[in-house]
Image (cartoon, rainbow, N blue to C red; front, side, top):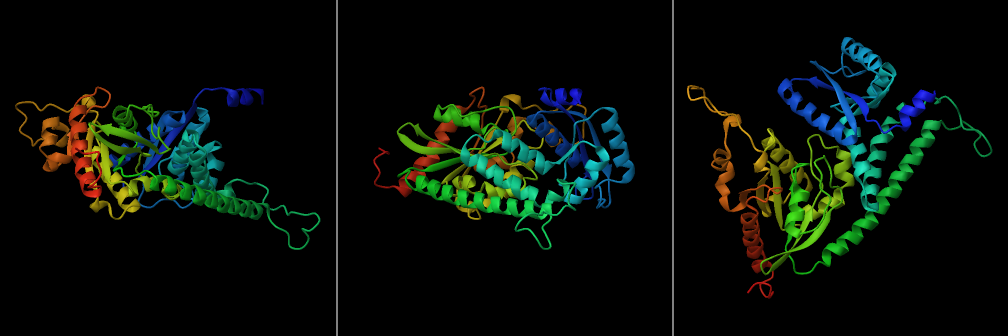
Length: 401
């Protein structure tokens, strides 16, 4: 008992195993990308990945997701290596979660729960904490069967005679009441934020959007000369930050938003609806992309799809593509005697500039925010876009002269 208490009190990172499945919709190549991202998520949460497990399945096992043989193999490793936590890349049903925890005898999380945990640790303001708490309760509600081992007990006492009420039913009611209270609280804050947005005057609104950990906050600090928290971790920014920026003689509002990710939990999209209203009400979107990431094209697609869900009128907005981290970009050099067709892995930065990215030259720029490469070019392009909109929106405003 003393040893276990010491382990809980220590600040040592938890040892984790990562688990994924290969299906007809998720081939082995895709799974590798997802598992890399899952390991980054685990690292952000403070866990060390010890080993990865995966299994090819025609159809997931409704009881444990994986087959019985693979489950026994992982359980044996978990117990022999004293693993603290098992993390699944796919969302687990309440019954699967309960069954796997019984077999593994350790904490079991799925991707959604892991992201919620990171959000909870990153939330700073009361508003962000309320949003995360709401998402956590919505995730927890159908999984309460996993939380209790005394479901057969009945509540007794004065005023509780009759058929009684199971403990789990009481907890469900408490959580539903809590969800209602949090939603009411968020509605009040939403009204306050809507008033704040309405009082921002005759200024064009520009929002930074993109996949998580692409450098939005670093770029925000560079353009606004502010000190927004930035770190090489996933979801460093949860709270929306708005700063007034002046380029030459033109002021506008610049917003830093929460980053997106593949398989983003629907609970988070819903509870962070108000935060994402900044995207909906912006005039210009600066889509920041980490071009050094091998799967940046899929990241672009993920962000575009998420934004379409948030704002169906996205086609009416001006969108700038900013490809960041060019200082970290690398490619495979082809041998001179290699006659095979060049792949995207062989593309140089110049090659990428001459693909579809370069078709809208005015709204595409390649930069390095940390090394300050091409920042003046970016500022000039932002100025042109904002000035054009400003002249249309506020023709009698004297900012432009």
